[in-house]
Image 1 (cartoon, helix red, strand yellow):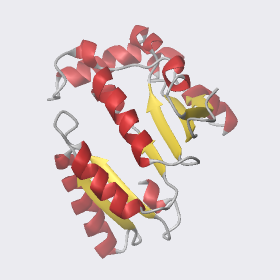
Image 2: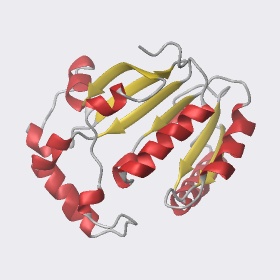
Image 3: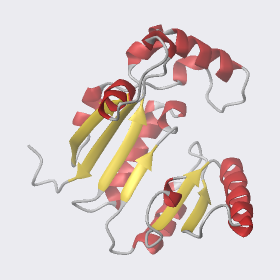
Image 4: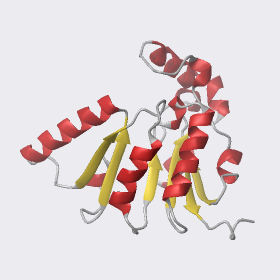
Length: 195
């Protein structure tokens, strides 16, 4: 729902699984017709990350982006991809973005696997249909993954707890009951800027 929190002068691209994109697009269009949501320039693209998607998606993004700066946000995606798919996705973003463009990513650390919240998440995912082969395929990322991304510089790193403190959000549950998501903001740099 970020397009509705940000200016209507921006172009937005919503990428998700085809069935998710179809539902979002249908619901958003209905809410806009009812006047519940304002108009935004949103392009919806359904992608199956287990298939060969990059050429078609690159054309769509390039036509939309042109020479404009961009911010790519990965939220609720890479947990369900394997490491090779994630590596390919970040390399894909590197090709699309120019120096100064931004990349945001939300992911879990491996320590989350020891929490009650994670056990509940695994129970839930066991009841759902995912293309992931088994629970071991659900990905967690160390901070070092983001720090080592070629041609990106890690600008900021927060998690649920640091942001709750910053925004004065009182935490009501024990930490073991919370899926502590980590949020990373990176900026694309030229290869000559890399240390």
